Length: 64
Image (cartoon, rainbow, N blue to C red; front, side, top):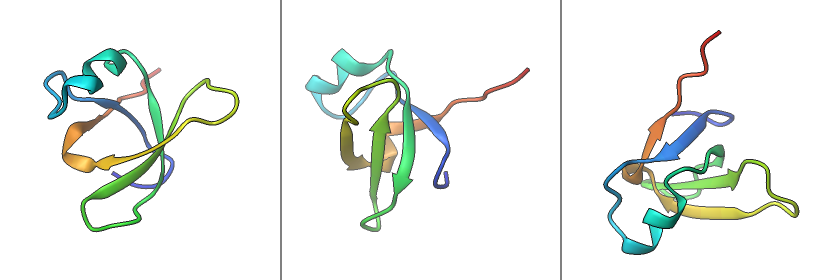
């Protein structure tokens, strides 16, 4: 995972509130801590920024 990657929440996230956002995609903005990832939710205005643990995320393959 690197800055600029597109990611989604894993199907079985650690926190119950994350289940509401399983269909959303995010762009990696930064890595502010060793295990943390700063994300921007794709398609939100104004930007919706999250900082969560990277083990809650999986990369999205953008093929074709």
